[in-house]
Amino acid sequence: MHSACATLEIRDEADAVDAICAAHAKGVSCAIVGGGSKSGLGRYAPQAQALSTATLTGVTLYEPNELVLSARAGARLSEIEALLDQHGQQLAFEPMDYGRLFGAEAGCATIGGVIAVNASGPRRIKAGAARDHLLGFRCVTGRGELVKSGGRVMKNVTGYDLSKLICGSYGTLALLTELTLKVLPKPQTECTLLAIGADEAESLALLRRATATPCEPSSLAMLPAGAALALDAEAAAIRLEGPAISVTARRDDLVARLASDGLRFETLDECDSKALWRGLRDAAPVAAAVGQIWRISVAPSEAFTVVERIRRAGAPVLAHFYDWAGGLIWLCLETAPDAYAAILRSAVDASGGQATLIRASAETRAAVDVFHPQSAALAALTRRVKESFDPAHILERGRMRAEF
Image (cartoon, rainbow, N blue to C red; front, side, top):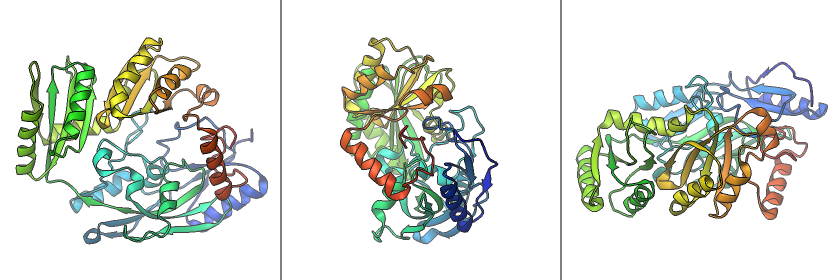
């Protein structure tokens, strides 16, 4: 382990090149820090040198008519969203703010951090993930090379796959300096239809039925009793967005299609609907619980089965909820040295999913595989990608995999 060094402020791309080349010459590794809201994500990997993009700020291009925005990596997500809101636009992938989850101040996230972890919210099932909205980027690799990839329009496919690759790499491949994103108009209004009275499994089945209708829901979540809204019963939540007349008609159509004995429906207006999905975006139903938090991706039809396997195997579930019609499960478990990793992974593997440990102590994150173990073929491919960008393992050494 290297001794800690003072944080280096990255003011421009030349600073990034110099800092990474210097680290390469010394053989030390670097941590990339933006707003600090995601510093608890990934394996615990003590770093010798922190590179801060906090001063690498500003929107460098915004063309509302072209639905394109470029910003430096350290630009605050909250500032970008405020600018877009002035023009009736948004980042449709609804990036999560991890502040609440880690007990930190909300609103500190940077756009570089959002892309680095592929942060995507409840609207992902309709709008896609962060990587689907990244048109291009500029970065400095672990080799100290300045790279530009992509363009300003979706039909420019130059480097498009590279954009997909960099998104979700947790800074292990390159230090991002500038991002170009597709933005979209905000919907005129929204409402949320709550279906109450079915049990957990039935509510999840109802959400899957809703996805097969022509009613075009933009988000679907299942909230166990007490998870949100102070409800004393399970609720399936379905968000509808668009012109007011369309939202009302689609809600009524959805009620008619889903109606059954014992089921009652309530509608949240625009204000309450936005508040609900903002909380679900930031994992509020599990964030307040005291324990270790896992994020599970699985086929929606397998969601309830996975949680039941975890319970039957003895892992004490303190809080949980389902997003993406069951495709995403947030779980908070009682604290244990191993975070019940073997139980979680066995339950998830049986359904072909993936489990990621999101919140745990530094000691646990150093001892447990935070990210789902990869197959031999995928692990070999991951290593080749890492070697091509950062052969000396300068960037975020040990953040995703113990071996690099």
